[in-house]
Length: 200
Image (cartoon, rainbow, N blue to C red; front, top):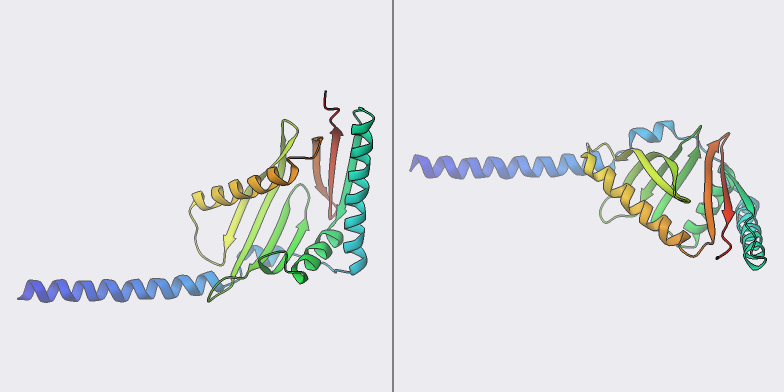
């Protein structure tokens, strides 16, 4: 009889501890990540969002002209924090992103993002610090730090986020006839340099 009572009490205690762990997990999940404290606010404007679009259109025109002429040409794209954040806010307003809020900073050789993901019950607050490396003419995102609220995450979680981001980047660049030679982040700007492909 004591054994059964002991087992029932142990199961009850485990159940209570599990509920406490879930509540604590939800609480930590809902808190702002430590990276949030390092993020700098950026002013956004409709003009900056339009400038972002104009720069991408200009780059696309340059690439198409070089491909048609069968020439390898160096092309550059410089995006400011103001332009990037303004475009992201525009995309949020148009419902193109599953987010409630996003902020990106370009530091000296790294990027920092803070995002609030629209999630059931409690919104997820994430923070990311990373950099971009070039491998065989393609950019590869390297995540140095990833926060989900105040939860302690295993290294594998960071690796999965990195893998997902790189799949998305690869899909976006799959049809662009460009070998990217350099990606630099400095003075609150992102500079991408590449050489057009001739198709030969």
